[in-house]
Length: 272
Image 1 (cartoon, rainbow, N blue to C red):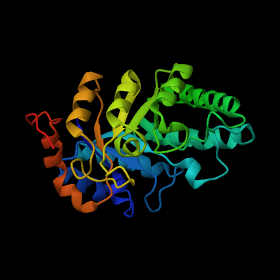
Image 2 (tube, rainbow, N blue to C red):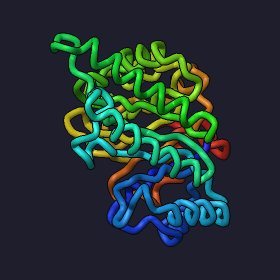
Image 3 (tube, rainbow, N blue to C red):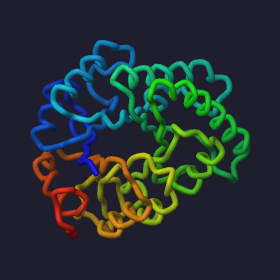
């Protein structure tokens, strides 16, 4: 697996070549960009073409772009028919941005689906699936895929529900991202990987103590990392080992951590 890192680690810095060079110098191989950075705009075509050139020059692989559209605009809602046109347009712009960078995965956990016991659950879930299917069909010829992320609460805290959505969609370019930290607050991360199985498209790797979303390096919390790594092998995961960390000081420890986990091609099997 490639060593990946989300730019969430440097969310307060502009998304530019200087930031990407810092990742390359830390031996990061693959990158997940986020839309948190100062000045980030999905309408900025020059930004995305520039990032594509910078990553190519640095030898960095672009795995994914983590989008938070519904958090940034409360009028957006994939489950709301009244907001359909505006929401599809906003997500379509994110697809176009990913295409401009050469294609990859759009990661989102901004999924407004009520709990099964709530009124209107079935209708809203079906509306969500209908809208996501339209986006997936728009994205497919552009080399763009969607990955829906598990959360620590709400509808998507249960990975089985995400898999149910995948089965309902049946699209080749829609899958699941398992966030180990989120799942450790809601259940068993190892079981979540088993449940996601063939739908597992990418990962968010970080640790915590089961009480809050700390985004720690693996080994600093209570997640059973040898079991995580073994389950990734068991389900045949072929994607990027994508760290999603909060503390910039952890960048210098990243390669060593990756090799200790035993997922690096350069490492012998290790344990934490």
